[in-house]
Picture (cartoon, rainbow, N blue to C red):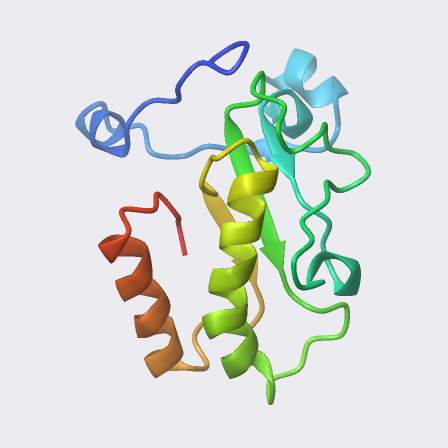
Amino acid sequence: MPQNGQDWPLVSDMIAKNQRLLVFTSDRSKQESEGIAYQWNYMVENQYGDDGIQKGSCSNRGESSALNDRSKSLVLVNYFASNPDRIDVCVDNSGNLIDMLHTCYGSSGNRWANFVAVDYYKVCSKEQQFISDFVFENKMPVNL
């Protein structure tokens, strides 16, 4: 596993080696005992739930280092309400999500998210296509 903010392997390299699974744990002891990466050694993460979807704000989750900590090479952006809402999810997972990705980009030291966590990602195909188009047009390395 990479140390001190070093790069992770490219997906193409993982495929070539037939090793495509990354597993993280929030239990520190499992890294030593089972070889499962302790997530807080490798990533920063913004606050989840209602506190994490405040327009113009992207603060770190309590367990996470500061979002701009470059010794952690992965960035996880959460964007979902505390109480899932299938009705508003189409709005949340389109322009609002894009705005949050930009906000978190700045908060994380000008790094795009490697992972994005949302609710109901398959509900709104047009909005999801909008996000995918935006991500690829802007060459954002975001996994949706």
